[in-house]
Length: 440
Image (cartoon, rainbow, N blue to C red; front, side, top):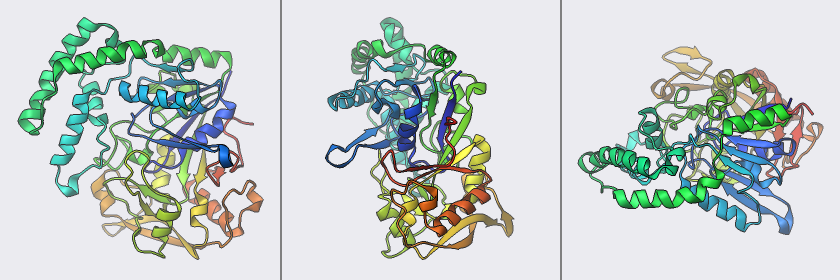
């Protein structure tokens, strides 16, 4: 039997999951996307020098850049078919075979134009302090329709009469909200229907029973990699609600969002930056000033090139939050950590780690549930000496500066889980492996 690994973000997303999934795919035969939509972004840097290529992926699993690897989009993903087709065309233009290696679940709820309109109109109507920081891609409204059992799914595209009947009903409902409540324009039924039907024939060859395919691949002995989007602290149940995404980002969703039994998930790799970042609104206890030059926050922002892949907004930056990560480790059942972007901290004379908080005069060592309590948390810091040597591109543990090793060891101790991998750069081989998730 093969071994299956789940890769999840343990912070507020943007931890560097794409590179690690690509690196792990060297030992996997299939890569599965199990939640979210095209509001997530992975940037992969492949090759060196003049041959270096950068790929920005939103829906297609990162394993697609590895020849021969099968990729799957599970039922837990909300799908903008137009965006998926554009992404496929971009990859094919770069010489990557996609259509014969990608399977899409018929159970994926569709993101249609009215979802996008609702998303943007709602965010615009929010007071400045209440804005979620949504990407405006229609993700939230699409998940709402799924839970309300009025979603149109990929499967429905292939039955035009039934699709049209369902579309008319749901569009009447959403157009009422758009025009009477949000003061936005209505969506035209005929244009929506015609666009969907045009997409139906293009996506039909990609659609298949992902759940059955994954089970068959496992029985055959394939290693499978399950690729999460966003991060645990943005999970709709376990994150800083309501400043969260609209799906479950935790490891357990790999099962529900792809149709494979939880007993077949063998190792959970938690991807974690050596510091913290966050895009959009919501509380962030260890946040630093990123605008003032010659400060740790500015170094994290500038050296880390902390700009959202999808939003192009500057990411907020802060010290590593061990109390938040401790919560993530427990929720996900993390087997081992992968620390990314260690080199961003190179040259700082002193580093701080948030080990817990003071909340209403009490010490708290786990991130509280809900945004209101998190917003009132005052971080408690522990300080460690920094290092002046470069860690960029280092490939052996013993070649890391002594203080860098001490910093990682302390993170391991505070978070109660081993550091199995350290990513020291964007290239595949800029990786220190202490324990391989696939047991190599």
